[in-house]
Image (tube, rainbow, N blue to C red):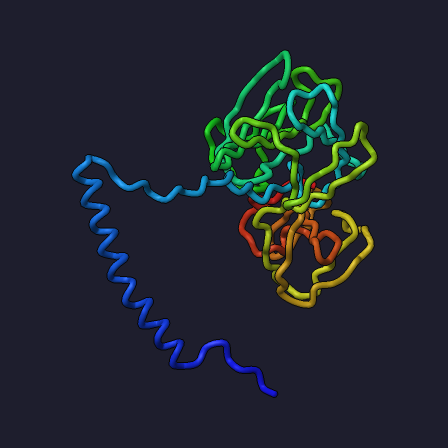
Length: 284
């Protein structure tokens, strides 16, 4: 048998009519209460507001150039939740660019007995990142920097036993567990246990020109050919470095770009951009 409705239509209408009749009475009671409070010099308490939560963190990326792989460790004696990074891809840590893990305003500092030359980037919302032991600065004090922009040169100034990037993320002055691309990093006690490859590539989308452009395994004309670009192609440039000079259309250029998707290098002379060294692209 079909189930009977809990309320008949007539009962529903009667219930609705009763509710409608109660609403004016409630409004009238509220008006009387407000008037009475006003006579007494009081006001009704406002509903409690929910407390605002902490500002969302920027999408922090690695503090070293696009495409590079570094290993990291944490020293238990650190005052805050810091990680120290060194290269683990065969490249030299000393002299490698240190880059902004998110956009913000950079300020320069020096503490010869401790942090050495260091940069602080204010990202807004209470968030800041610190980059210690720089060999030198690459931006002016108070400069606005983009994510992936070089802010210094990795070194070993201050209280340091070797070149590395000492990196911190702070919220309202309190050190936070470091997160890259939204994922928390572990805190190993020694190097070599964990590695991080940077995708901090900034705005490095370009277009090539010409046809039959060879992509090579390295920035050398005798390096093996990885693939060939048949015509103008949109490419994502991970990094750039100097290599063999290439001449085309009356111009010569010894800068080469590493292409992320083609996994090889092409001469910058085949990148559709007027500068020999591409702006905003980190060094390999």
